[in-house]
Length: 424
Image 1 (cartoon, rainbow, N blue to C red):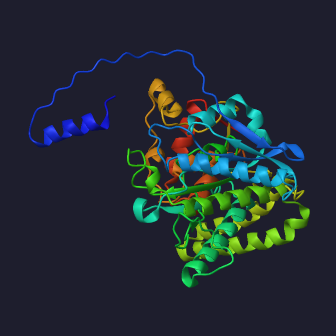
Image 2 (image 1 turned 120 degrees about the vertical axis):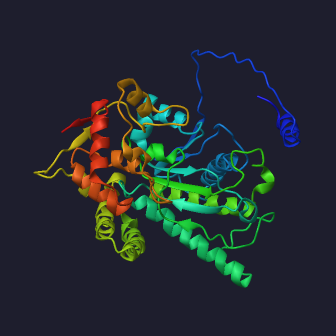
């Protein structure tokens, strides 16, 4: 590794037409090690059910926005809520609030495998990645996303409704110079938030929690795109403290609500869910795709079923009830391994394909629309022992995009051949 200054000097010599020859010696090895993951809790009346706040302390090229802002964000949520509870301004939460600072992706995969009780206790995860980029500098906007289409949850709608409210409050202030809730920091900007609401995208620890091994409902708060991430120009000067405060409020308010929601809150919650359902149905209608319209209707049914996870309804989610008869091949996932098939430093799937000398399934390289999950990620998530290959293909068309059923079938058959799936 060399310093940026030395690298720039070499680049300058190359621009002048000079020849630069480098010689390096690498000494590498493997040895046992460990990575300690800090965690803290605000105890709830129920210690068996938790709302988790996640971020990532480390990744290949850390910086101020990615992800010091997210790490500081959940620390501020913990500090603020803990202080308010201790001062008696907020009651003890009904459910426990947990805060976790892992390294990105691999540490979350390891944590949920090594400590399965974490996933078993978790009702929802709120993941803060980059949350503070000054828009006119980084060219990024704040995005508040939810669970993947394969696992719809009312948890998403809680965050979406809060974000729409913050958008409206900050727009009113920017428009008139006054407002009840401008959410300003003295050292930050005064423009409207204009956060993008809805959808699901991959790229951070939230996709691990939401993956088919655990299916934890998630709220994902993150700036994108930040043109300076993974460079030495991801610096504190790029951050806007007002934007960070607004993102932290959305995360804190969402988590506090989920930690305390009860039966008495269901009527108002159902109104919020109905409003968000109309947003999804409107977007589906504009697509003119019958499968997309059907998927939006199915999402509404499954979201109502998701209330049962919080003890707010007795009925099981519709997707969990096995039909009496299924046409076609139906796969289910084996107990191990758990988690996604790829990480930043290692691809379990590519390793197995190479060892077995199997060709790489085309579905892995099929490009999905922007602001959505990949075909391979959602295909595996939809494997539940109830859906046939054809059912999975239909649902992919309605939620991700059109895809040849042969590619879906080949991908799932390959996963069976390498030992990840079995035929029901």
